[in-house]
Image 1 (tube, rainbow, N blue to C red):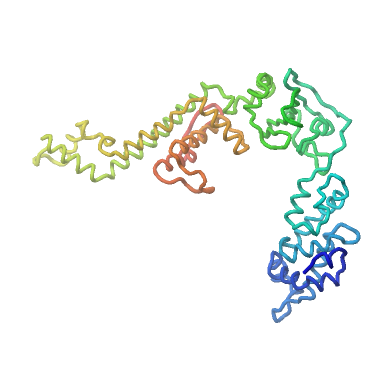
Image 2: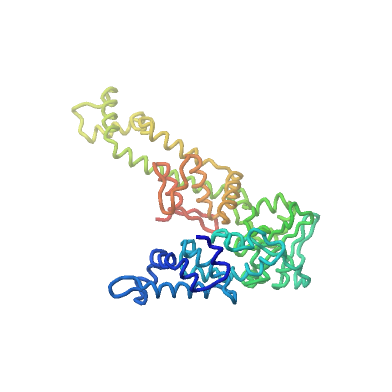
Length: 426
């Protein structure tokens, strides 16, 4: 089938003739199957056979409605992509309507990709990618709105926009929703007197359009592309003098692990270690109490040492054994238990600087902030690394083995208050 022979101009009858069977099949077997076939008797005869005429009319009506142009010049393309089931549901065609309207304007611009100006050369995914990524040059804004310069040094200026116009002006060239001049602007959702937006303007940008927007109320720290940026590196390396300003302007920053005092991290860490090791010893004691082979070994060794005999009662035998230190060292007897305790202790030897480095890495990976009351999760992460455990296990799944049990226990049963007190939760 040569699409361009019949799809350059839209004609309902011709489209129905050329791709009607494929449209009906896509409707009956694709994403619209349940929505229409099983719930609307309009499209199914009493004998269970599909009403092809009604189905075709419904499909074409929806595709025509999804085409924003007066002459329905994009309906043939919509029909082709729906027939191929690249467009899964008719509702998806309607979702494309605003993009088709934009495409109709974009293709007339000189800077729009030449090979994309003929929509019939594009698949659904190509169209979606090209139109979604294309950004026509915006006219420079002249109205600066209302904003305050709250900090300036040789490296950076810091502006607080007080209205949407200022957020748009100082956010020109970025992808921030607070700087959007088309569609919905979210400045009012984020900015408030108690939780302002900070826009960082480098005096010597290292890349075209380098800017940063910080909002401590939602822990969102973004670069000009609206990608998460490393706040710690930003305030201590990129703009090394800026940290002192934000410590005063946003005191809560000290709660973030990269900025928390080492003494507080050490205090919390000591409590975490104590809780974990208490749990470890509970496990080891349970193993010992259930280990019949250990009891047999104790009896054999006590007999060899001549400290028990057949005339003693069972209670006297065990009292004698328990008084002999050499016979009660379960770790000396059980190599696996000894390695387990040794390895858990080793995994918990984490210095404050290492905790901060892990938190910085996680902030980059997860786009979350980590405060000192999240320190138990930093320990769990570090322990996973130490034990070489697999993190890619899906939500709700547990790690395998004794080490994995300990890590899962740390995540599930430790809590840290805002005062830095660690507690056990059941």
